[in-house]
Amino acid sequence: MRERTKKQELPAVIQIPKILAGMYLVTGLMLLVLALLVSVVAEEELTAKIGVLVIYVLSCGMGGFLSGRAYRQKKFLWGLLMGGIYFALLFLISFVVNMGEQPNWVHMLTVMSICMGAGMAGGMIS
Image (cartoon, rainbow, N blue to C red; front, top):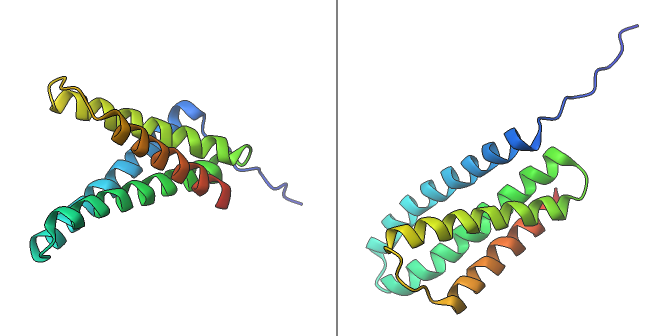
């Protein structure tokens, strides 16, 4: 009788960048859709702000879900980690693009909480 082989898990060093790439790909695609939506809607600024927050939640939730599925233990911590890494890269890119301009720390803490919370929630439902 043939013995069932257990699915080999990829090491975290390989898995995390793959999940992050997927998260940023989804973010980019959703930002394109949001740009089209904002060009049609009258309340452009409000739509853009809400849309960006929704994109953060969906992308980080997806990353948490995928990392929870990949590692199967301490799923909420893996999701929290993915949301934190996503935010850290987002912050770094924003800092470079704004040429070191002082960020609004209240906004940054809010976005960090949203990213990490959505990642953790995604990990818990995986």
